[in-house]
Length: 405
Image (cartoon, rainbow, N blue to C red):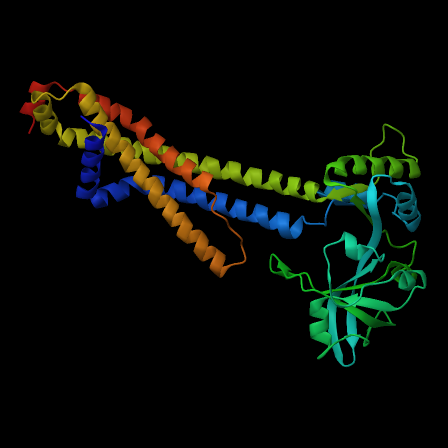
């Protein structure tokens, strides 16, 4: 029997028993839908993390006191580390050979006032003038902190779009804001960045780092040093160079671990991939269970179908059908049945991810390789669990089959 004829007979059987076919495929549909939704969310989140969270600037990494902390034990141990001070920044700026720029910054939080208006929990960042070129912020209006502002410890500030919108009715340039008992003149407004996981990234104020340390206290605050490598391919070498310089400054012996951390887009993304890898493994495990259950159901339905069509099989054999023809017919039917479940699962996942993207802030992206793999795996489940029923049908004795009611 030609393969085309086997596929036609299989589809006719599916159409003749629509409800039974759907109920048979329920496990496979759930498995494929679950897998595609999880993969779509992970893919969307990977792109989102790479673009919005792990994007620290072009070829940029940070030398910080804490680095990436992943446990309470590491956090407690990190509290004993030395603060990174302006002397460290000056040393790296003078000695790094593989860096095109070296900047520094430090963070705090404070409430702001402008006239009778007030905003709360605003991120206050002391920064060197070159941080506008190293980081991801861009000037929307006015200017950024200058070298003169930095060297004279000027009381000027560069504000985020949310701060400008919440405190001022018109242009904020030349106006003043007050925090920590000090008054600052607004010299620039940043271009709007947007949100990350629903949290605004425009609620900030930048002031000269020298002014920041004067207010906070130079010995009470640890700074972060931003290093921009000369080229992307020199990132690892630049990090190694910065690490050696910092270890030498902190007089660390060879056997002692770093008492500082290094953070880059690659390290943040690697941490995220480690987390999503665990999620993906759980999803694959759940999917495998559903696929096995769905495959067993397909096998049982195919066995029942063989019993129901025993007389038909006898007639076909008496008319010259060979064993392989019967085997092919039932195998194709099982594969068609489970593949249809995979296709329905993909469609359900596509609709689900579109609805989720439209109604929530969770990003998603449907990767075509995952769709292809899901359909192929569902077809493979039908092939594997359809072998026994198909072989049973092929081995039926034609005379005994014709006698069946």
